[in-house]
Amino acid sequence: MIEVEIKVPVDDFASIREALKKTYTSFVGYSRDDDMYFNHPCRDFKNTDEALRIRNSSSEGYVVTYKGPRLQGSMKSRTELNMKIEDFNNFLQILKQVGFEFSAHVVKVREKWTIGVASVNLDTVEGLGKFVEVEVNVETVDNVIDAEGIINGILRTLGLEDKPTIRESYLELIMKGGAKS
Image (cartoon, rainbow, N blue to C red; front, side, top):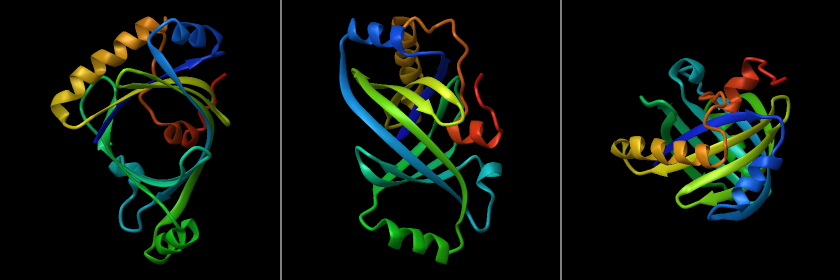
């Protein structure tokens, strides 16, 4: 699967919620996501533009995610593979035994909505601030342009089309010390 997404920093979510309620959206729910990132023992994921994350989500439990290097495009697009973890402590020990090292921690509270094939997340990220994240998952690189079109349409619907967007991950923003003012 290829994840295509964009983030927009915002001061609050009130106008976004109102716009979401006026469209064909579904409110999915809330979650608290506690993300632990790990670095590979033989290559630096910062240099290869990859990520390995274990997420403890209040809505989904423990999930391990591998994110590949970014693909070309105007938004952040990359391969994403996910797998549910049944035994977190055992999996963590496996990572440590084969040499993976903890590198960063990201915590966010997420309000989840869907519009058709897209996810719209209202994220409050510790140390960074508030963001609207719009995401579409596609099967092949050939569909990335279509996904970007869907995302741009949603940004227009939410009144965010002229706002500055961020292609960087929350991890990258945290590592840069980039707290939003």
